[in-house]
Image (cartoon, rainbow, N blue to C red; front, side):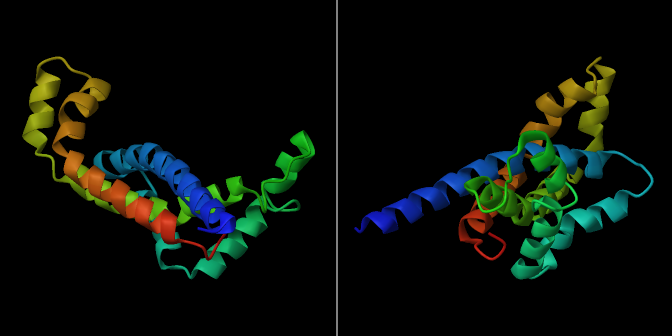
Length: 165
């Protein structure tokens, strides 16, 4: 194989793996909040988090430039404080892959968490377990298959996504 092909493959794997790890961590937390908590604006938050799933990749990339570019809403502060711009680095590819893969993780994991029988959660609370311990001892094991499916879908999307990069 040509050296440029190996470099491209390695970079794509690196970006997809890092983005997937971040998606699993953030997506699991967001899914739990969306599945088990009630608050004002919950459905609006769900819509905003799902938006990259339906937007064309070029539009998502454009919005990332608007937010993270050197003169962007967040990018100008990053550049002002550190002198570093994220755009056109492999970190921006991770960010773009994270943004487009996150909705897949949130949707599948939220459905898996919502499918956990409330009686199991109530029994855990009755036994004196708090919200944190109940999540790790009851909810996480019972929704594991949905979370794995979300992680696999997110990795595939991150690996195959090149539009916003």
